[in-house]
Length: 199
Image (tube, rainbow, N blue to C red; front, top):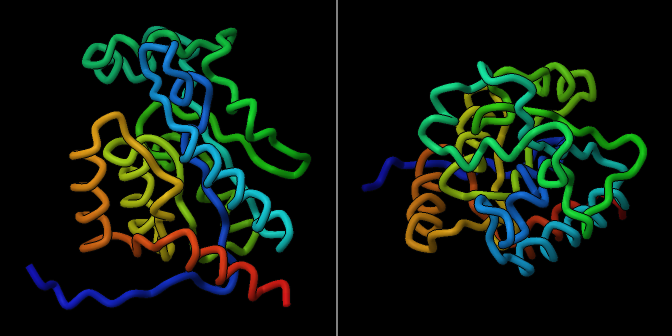
């Protein structure tokens, strides 16, 4: 289906949003996790380039403080109940250590925008576009990309920096996001764009 879509790329002030690159999703020992070292490595590479360009970086995690938070979501996916404040699973993956000035957004639903102040924080930093990465493509990455568009940000999904437990769902959602909501681009294109900003 041809929607006559137009690729927009990134704006003048992009931010990197690493969606749920946390131990609970990157460690296969967790019931929510998957084995995705290539995705972790791609995110580490993007982090280094964004840091070098002094551009904003946001991480998200999922934390449930009480039984009434995202109640229906947790009824559908009971494994989410391991994501409590005192759990190791809610911490950013140990291979992607946050630095001073980088923001951790706690959420309870799929989208980084739902019930959080990320939009206000992005606008306070003058951000006009997002590079969205993380886990999982068919869930929280997609929800964040769609909501990013709905908050009037240009959205780029770095193809090698997202992953899913189901490769068919991964491929289908990359296709669908690229058709409607975001530019799904190879890492090389994203890295080249950010590198140019430091020249």
